[in-house]
Length: 352
Image 1 (cartoon, helix red, strand yellow):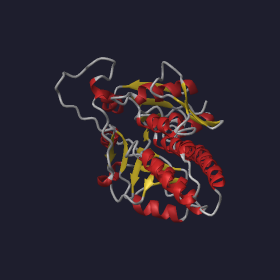
Image 2 (cartoon, rainbow, N blue to C red):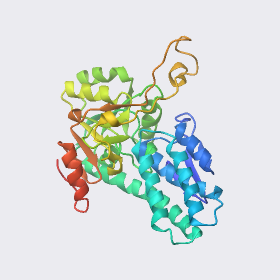
Image 3 (cartoon, rainbow, N blue to C red):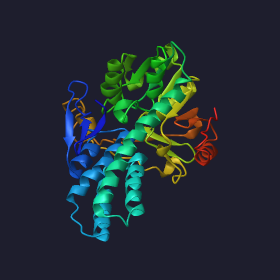
């Protein structure tokens, strides 16, 4: 099934914390369970988080018992604040919630049942647009790939991180559809092993040649194996091109630079935050220390030892060869490129 599916008033998701050994579908029936699923990484990946949050707002409507617009809107904003507190770094979460609020504000003169119907429709639109956007990212990125190439990726930015196709893996899927055979090196991605558990799982299911390596093997593989490209996803892109992605991405970018390997970031325009000037302003989520101290089912760190567990790091724009977006491939200077592309969305932006 798709990573996220709306069916009979319920949000159905694949519980990604159980993969790859168990394939469990969760029925999310209320806003509290939706927030918990986002917070606990049962649904993860910037686009998928935005999709889930939009449907979470629809689920939250069940608990709003308002008779006038003012009371309805106040309760709606409380639900929005509740979901927005789940994870701080991925901008798609806030982008999707803002889209849902825009529906309410633009239709304030309609009846509350009509507004509720429009909100459900908007959530479905967000998920459908996510799938279409990722497909376009795949088509644009596949143009960079030739038969027999190898890419290295970090974390999971495939179909499990989106409504369909993925971002960083979308070019691989489209290239495979075009008859090109692509080999993928997947960093395991400590401490939660999204690369080993999720990227390898979905690529294997799709019949794509994949090799899992530990994070510390990336330099060895770049030096001794053939790596043609590095393609990663993104959780927030600042106006100057600085990019927040899963912890370890910055190190991979430095290694790619040292070995002369192109380093691309794949993501939708909704991940570009023009209100954030540089990466210094991006809030980095701190995850529980238990993800490291008990990462393999038993304690692996001595009691009393301090643990640092940032979920993301920021890659400087100078290390990024280009951005693969649904509008085209954007090369430096990024701020001018983003602004130009935003101004000319109807005609696209093929800068590279």
